[in-house]
Amino acid sequence: MSKTAFKEPLQKRRCLIPADGFYEWQKTVKAKQPFCFQLSDESVFAFAGIWDRWRDGDGKRIKTCSILTTTANAVTVDVHDRMPVILPSDDYDLWLDPGFMDMEGITEMLKPFDAG
Image (cartoon, rainbow, N blue to C red; front, side, top):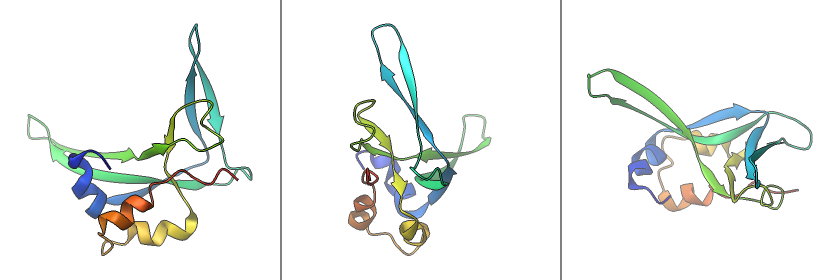
């Protein structure tokens, strides 16, 4: 994780964002071409996410969340150089564990999903 602004949310405010697919856009000469990616069995999966809350200039409380990205895997690399972090279901409990705050262990989870 390169941005220090994300360090605390990454340690303390992780979430799962369910999905059944995601889009990446490939740049072409004339425009951008969308590609939809799904798991081979079309099942629901979860992105690694972080959430935060802060106050805007007027003092209004704002709640936000972000999907974390990583380098592209073999399936997506021809379309885009990055992709969302898709967590294996076996990692959901650890990702959500508030006691798991080891940055090295957390960042090891932010890898491209198995292309198989």
